[in-house]
Length: 359
Length: 258
Image (cartoon, rainbow over all chains, first blue to last red; front, side, top):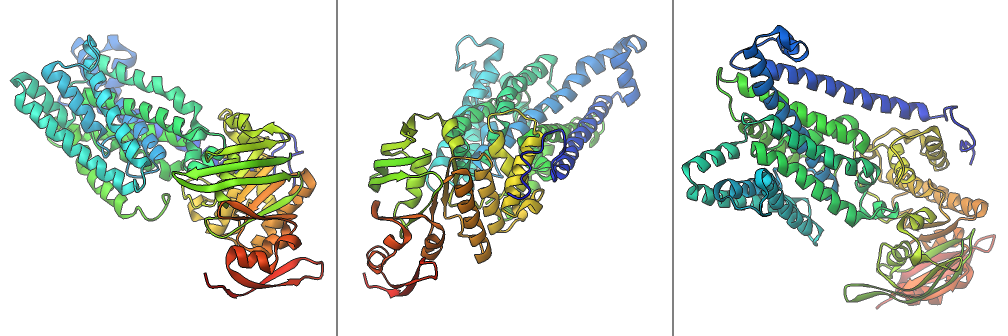
C-alpha cells in the first residue's frame, strides 16, 4: 500500500479527508438553514389569521407576555400556537415515517399516505369516534390514537409481507397501497353512513385533514411519539443507511436485516398513525419531505433523517400559512392543499422512477 | 485463518443447491478460485460461509465452529462482495466505504476512519471518486467501491462473488493482483467465484470446481484445468497450453452437444 495512511495519527488530517469534511459542513449548513427557515415559517404561521399580528407581536407575546393584551395572549398562545406547532410536529412525524418506509421497503413511492397507512389509521380512529370501539379496552383518551396505530400497523405488516414475496416489486407495493386506500375509505364511508350526526361531523372534518382542532395535549402526544421512536433511528443510523445498498451487503456488515426492518416499520407506523389520529389524513408530506432531503444531503441517515423531518415540517408549516391566506377569514382544510400540491409531485416521481437513485 | 468445510448441504425450497460439499482446509494467505457453470452453487457456497444462506454441515475457522460466531464477529472476520452491487442510491463512494467501518459504533467519523477508507480506496485506484455519488459512477466503478467496502475492515477471509463481471481487462488484472498481494502480505484468505478460467489460472493458488452442487475438482490450476474436467463440467471442448511460467491457458474450441 503506497499511500497507506493508517499510520498517520490524528489530529493530522489524512490526505483527502478535507473533501469529506467539506461535504459534511455543507450538509450541516443545510440542516441549520432549514431549522432557521422553519422557525421563520412558524412565526409567520402564528402571526397570520383573521386577527392579523406582526411577527414582532408574536415574539413579544412569547418573550414578554405582560406587555400585550390578554386577548392577544389567549389567541396566540391557546389558538395559534397549538395549530402552528401541530403543523410542524405532524410534518416531522409524517416525513420521518415516509423516509424510513422508503428506506426499508427500498421504494421511492412509499409514504404513510400512498401505502394506505393514513387511510387505515383513519378507519381505526373513526371506529373509536363513531362506535366507541376500542382495540384495547379502557384506553380512555388514547382510544383514538391507539386504534389508529393498530390499523396502520396491521396495514404496514401486510405491505411488508407482500414486499417480501416474489414479484413484490416497487409497483406491486404501490398498487396494493392504492387498493388499501380504497378499501379503508369504503369502510370509512360505511361508518359515516351509520354514524350519529355529531360523530359524522367529526369524521368528515377529520378525513379532510385539518389542524384547527389542535390542542397543546395533541401537540404534546405527537411530539412525545417522535421522542419515543427517535432513539431507535439514531442507534441504527448506520444500519439503515447500509440497507440502501441492498439486503445482502447490509447483512454482510453484520446487520440483522429482518429484525431491523420490522422494528423500524413498527416505529414508522406509530409515527404515521398518531398525527393522523389527531389531525386526519394529510397526504404527500411524508412522500415529499424525504425526497427533498435526499436531493440536498443524500441518504446518510445522520443528515437524511433530520433534514427529512425539517423539510416535512417546513412544508406543512408553509401549507398551514397558505391555508389561511387563500380565502381571507377562511381556513381551508390543510389536507386538501397538500393533496393538490402532492399529486403532481407523486406523478413526477412515478414517471422518473427509472433513473437516479433507485434501481 | 484456516477455513474448513465438511458435508455442507443447502437448499432453496425443495431444490438442493449444495450437496455434501467438502472443502479441505483453505490455508491463510492463499487465493482460491471457485469455478463452475451457472447454477453450480458458487454463490450459495459463499453465502453459506457468511451465514446469509441456511445450510447444514460443518464450517470451521481455525478449528472453531463458524456458526457459533455472533453476527457481528462473523461479519468482522469475513468480508463479502455479493454478485449484485448495482444498488444506486444517494450516497457518495466514501460514505459507502465508511458504512462497513462504522456499523455498531457512534455517529462521529474521525480521521482514522477516513484514513482507513481512503487507504483502501487508494489501493483500488478509486480515491479520486471519494466524493462522487454512487448513481454517477459506472458499473465497474461501483463494483470497485463495493470491493473497497468489503476490504475496509481488514477481514481475515474475503469472499468475492464474480468481482470482475463489470470490470474492463485492466481493472480485472488490477483487482485480482491486489487481492493476491493482500493474501501474501496480510495472510488474507481469499475465495473468489469467477467465470473466467484463465483469470483463475493466473491468480489462484487453488481452484475448486463446483458442478451441480458437488465438488467436481479441487487442486492447483494445472491439476484442475484439464480438457477432461472442462468437457465434463462446462460441456466445452478445450485445448490447454502452457504459459512461459507454466500457467495453464484454456483455449475453448467449441461447445459439446448435451
